[in-house]
Amino acid sequence: MTKYIDVEGQAKNINDALETAIQKATAQLGLPRESVTYELLEKGKTGLFGLGGVVAKIRVYYEVGVTQKAETFLSELFRLMHIDAKISLKESEESLDIALEGDDMGLLIGRRGETLDALQYLTGLVVNKGEERHVRVNLDTENYREKRLDSLEKLAKKTAEKAIKYKKNITLEPMSPQERRVIHTVLQNYPGISTHSVGQEPNRRVVVVFQNAKTS
Image 1: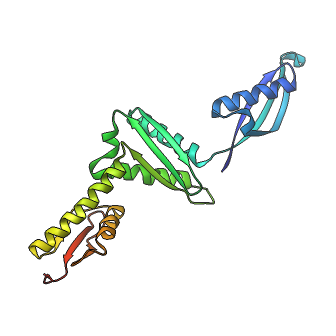
Image 2: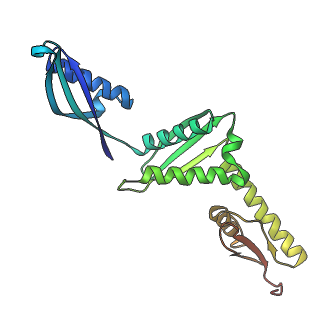
Image 3: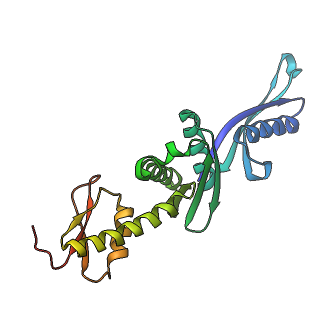
């Protein structure tokens, strides 16, 4: 996405005034000189008979990529939340992987990862706005995603064994669509077991069904 800002520079001649304006713009944007382009909007002299030098007003164009949009959004959000977090980003053709590090990561994870999921969702909205291609955002901290995945896989198998042992259906706690998908996937070929979801978001749950159990 191409954006721009208008800045002014003042110097003894037009070339120096332009360079001053460009330096001001790149410093404000935090971008290297070679990553921006500009056009001269207007120029004029200052002071009596132009003795004060030359003023150049320029429009500086710059590209805002998904990585920069994500970092800017999260940095500002964490500043408002008074959370000191290191943000590491790795962009590929179809995804943007974001890893967070810091002392308050438990606050960003939240109950069953709900806060982390919300941050991931919001970041995805921000980075994909105005983009021609959709980038999948994967946001994680303290390897929570992998730990949660392992926990869900164990829960699925344990619940299936319990359903078979007691010959009854078992309804799990409410989960996000991604977490329910894990349960369904793990148990899709489990002997004597099937699964389906019931309820409305955000309280939708997975039911682990003992196939010989009577429907209640």
